[in-house]
Image 1: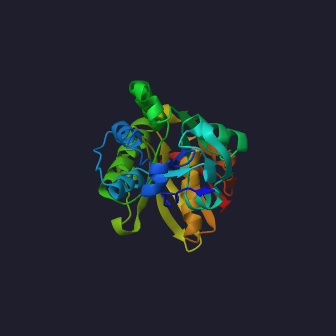
Image 2: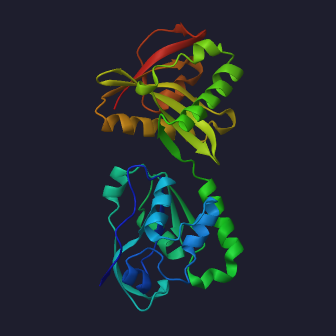
Image 3: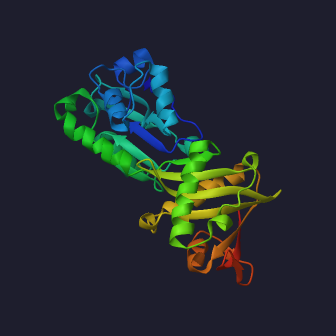
Length: 299
C-alpha cells in the first residue's frame, strides 16, 4: 500500500484541515496539495486574506502562524489514480499524539470522503467538524461557492493566542476596558493594577480579528496558577468561548507543572465555574467593589 505524508502541526495548532489521502503528484513531490489542478493553496490564502508566499515551506509556516495544521484521514492506502472513489483498501491515521500535543478546536474536512470517514469513525467527538467543498480540480468550476464555504468555516473558529507581545496585551486591555470599566463600572485605576511586564502573560480569543475573551496568566505560588481578569465580550457569552479559553489556560498550566487553579469569582458567574469543575472555598468578600468568592480546581 502507499503511505501518506507526515502531519503538519505544532502545540499551538487549533484548526486541523484533513483530506482523504495525497495524490500521486503530492506523493512524488512529498508536498501537500502538489497537484497543480488542486486549488487548495490559492483558496486558503484567499480565504485567510494573506499573500501566498508560493514557496512550499513558507506556505506551511503561514498556516502554522495561523494555528492551522494539515494531515489526511488515511495513513496507508491502495487507490487507482487520484480520485477519492477509487480507494480499494486503506488504514486510518492515529490522531492520539496530535490531540495530546495540540489543542484542536475544529476540524475542516476537505471534501466528502474525509468528512464521511471522520463521522463514521467518530475520530473527533469533542471538536467542531465542518465539511467544505473539496479543493480538487473536479470542483474548479465552483470556485465562488467553494471559497464561500471555506471562508465561512474559518470564521466559525475562534483562535486563541498566548503571550505578552504588545498586540496581545493591547487586545486584552481593550476587552477588559469594555467589560470591567464600561459594563461593570469598575474604576480603571483598580482594574489596571498590572504586574511587571516580564512576569505577565495573557490569553486572548479572537473572532474575525476582534478580541472576544481574555485571561491574565498569573502564578499564585509554585503549584497554583490564577486565571485572573477573565472576561468574555457580552454578545459572545453562552457560546462555549469562555469554557474553551479556560480549558486552554488549564492545559498550559498543567504542562508547566501547576497542580491547582485558584480564582476570585463574581457571584453571578459561580455556576459557570462550577460547570467547569471549580469548587467554592471561601465566604463572600468584596473585591474592586464587587461581591466575590474564591474557587479552586485540581488540574
